[in-house]
Each structure stands twice: as structure tokens, then as C-alpha cells.
Amino acid sequence: MMYNSAELLELVNKALVANDVTSEPKGLYAPISYVLSLGGKRIRPVLLLMAYNMYKDDVESVMLPALGLETYHNFTLLHDDLMDRADVRRGMPTVHKKWDENTAILSGDNMLVMAMQRVSKCDAKHLPDAVALFTKTAIEIDEGQQYDMDFESRNDVTEAEYLEMIRLKTSVLLACALKMGALLADAPASDAEALYQFGEKLGLSFQLQDDYLDVYGDFKTFGKKIGGDIMCNKKTYMLINAQLLAKGDLADELQRWIGMTDANPEEKIPAVSRIYNELGIPELANQRINEYFQQAIQCLEKVQLPTERKQMLCELAYKLLNRKS
Image 1 (spheres, rainbow, N blue to C red):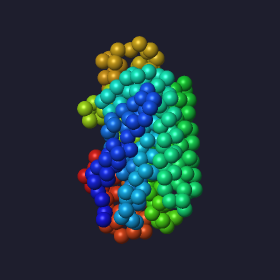
Image 2 (image 1 turned 90 degrees about the vertical axis):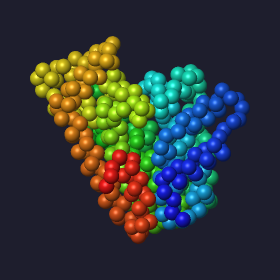
Image 3 (image 1 turned 45 degrees about the vertical axis):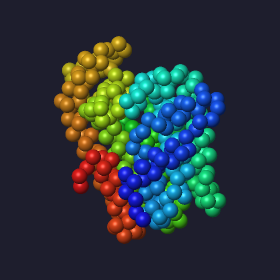
């Protein structure tokens, strides 16, 4: 049976409820339960199950590793929100706001261990490869996070450096999910690698779209405050290219806004957005988003399966990037 993304999402959500952590002490586990209950697209577990389902039907047999990746992803969000001092995640208070910073650190640490525990709940023959893939990915994500932090104090970040940072911080976990699903399904190595590359390119496209939506999105659908990246001068694809392209008075104005430590959001966000518009940054971002998306589809075409076995994954990719065809 081939499941579509909505059906797999339903299975994942049911499994998360069934595996909800209600242990003592509640001060440790309640925030974990809270984080995992906030919803979201559950892209990573769905991708793992979808990749597995391309080769085998018994998707429930790999549900715990799928939940492991979702647990790990939410752990990274919990700690990212703490580092960024973000108040809202998916329209709800972040853990360090609802509880406190120490709780966010400790509950996050526990989620990391839980993630490894769940990933390891697979057949013994797949355990070494699954654990090796997961740990490699987790290390790369930490590297990406460090680059992101380093960029905060630099004004010379290049587009290439930024793309490598988001590849590590965002893309590799999508790629890991797809490759892990393929590995657990005993897929050919060439298919597993093609799916990894598909996830990597899709992740780049997805993160660049996230940068775009932080400026031009709708709070109700985006789930985060619009303009948050602008307010904290986050080195995004948008800002990096604006700094490269801005000349004369426009460059001075942009730098003036970046230098303000107490700017009014109602003034700074529209002002910087206007600079982006004048420089053609939205068009530049959308062009790059499209490039990576097309590269992702080309990688999927390399998977040696009938087109109908890849259709669900292809449809999900289009859905994630809000594309019709």
C-alpha cells in the first residue's frame, strides 16, 4: 500500500500521542510533551516513512526511528529558540518563555537522548548504518548552528558560506530522513544516495523559502513573527545579498538600520523590506529557490523505481514549496 503524505502525517501524530512521555519528574518531561504537541508538518518522519514505503508496505515497523528524527528536530528548535531569544514557535510560547531557560536546556538535552533511543529501535542488521547516519547528521547540524552563530559577528559572510551553513543546519536532516527510510527498507545504495541528494536540495530550497517568508509571509500561516530576522540582523540570504548589492545612499541606509540596537519594529521591518524590494532581493531569492527545487526533482528522477512509486514523494515536494507543478 502506498500512503500519501496526509495519511503518513496522521500515523505519525497518532504514534506521537501513543508514545507521549508522561514520566516523572514532570518538570523535565512536561516541556517535552508540550514541544512535541505543538504540531507542525512533521516533514522529517513523513519523509522517512515515505522513502521506506517506496520499497516496502509495513511503515509502522519503522515508526520509532521516524519519531526519533522528529524528537531530534524539535530538540534543535527548542535550543535554537533559546539561543535566539525567540518568544513564539508555531504560534505558541517557546519553552524558555513558558517555563525558564534552565528547563529549556535540560529538557532539550533529554530530547536528544530520547531521539537516539528511538532511532536505535530498528532491526539489528540496520542498527550500525542507522546510528552512523544519525550521529553524522547531528554533528553536521551542530556545525551549521556554530556557523550561524559565527555569522552574527561578521559583516563579510558570502552567499556560498551562507548556503553551506543552511545545508548543514537544515538540509542534512531532511536528507538523513530519506536515506534512513531507504536503508531500513533495504533499498539499493545508489537509490539511498539519490534520495539523500534529493533531500539536501529540497532542504536548501525550503530554507531559502523560509528566509523569504520571514520578510514577506503571513504570521497566521508562517507561525512566527514576520520580520524577526530583520530585527536581529540575522545573516539570511536576503540580508547577505542586500549588503552585496546596495550602493551609495541605499547601502548607508541599510547599514544604519543594521547598526540600530533599539529600533522600533514598526519602522525597521518596513524600511529594510523596502530596501530589499529596491534591490530586487525577492526576485533573486525566488530564483535561487526554484534552482534548488529543480535540482531536487532531478535527483529524484535518478531513483531506480517506477514513476508511480515516486509519485507521493514528488507530490510532497511540490506541496512543501507551495507549487502546483
